[in-house]
Image (cartoon, rainbow, N blue to C red; front, side, top):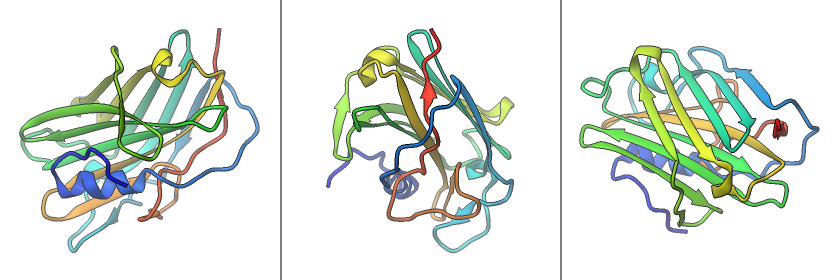
Length: 194
């Protein structure tokens, strides 16, 4: 399978992290907050841990015409001293369709893309946002519901990767584990609040 990937090694590694199939889970509220242990970032190559990849909190909100996600990190370095940073939020809708919103920041700029399925189908999505907020140690996404088939609910998970010659990654829903061959672990259903 060929994905449109940002040109950095970290993005390639992190895209690979965004692919396991999850099982149906019971319904939950329209806002979900999941805490991930600090320091459970894993190196994918030689080197030490990177706090720019260490997710400590994942929040999702499904309200109105959009889905909003916030990934709080131990310390999101600024673009000048962080190397590349990648984030991917995986979503599964009631009919089983998968979407992944990705944001990749390198010294050359930022790229935000929405993919459908596990292939390389890019979704044209006006209003898609991915922001790197270094002062708040946060990566934030806004995904219009119209771009993901206006679902009643979604299940979601996220991964973050960082590095230059050395890559690090953290799955926001796994305590100290990263599934190198799969996607972000999904949580319970996030219902739409009307």
